Length: 73
Image 1: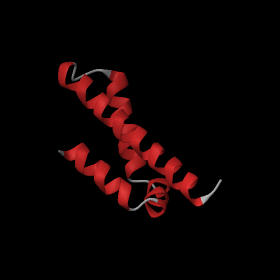
Image 2: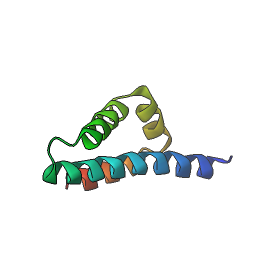
Image 3: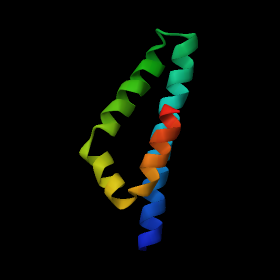
């Protein structure tokens, strides 16, 4: 895999985590006690605090900031 492919893969992994977070958040707005959504939020939080996430950010530093702005906005 070349450098561009590595960046795209890192961005796709982060994007999937952001989408999972948003999906879980939407479910929890309607069903605050939904066990699956609560577990997904927990898993996403663990991922965003992990060394693995930091490594992916090092590969694609410009992409995660944009995605995190969308997540917060």
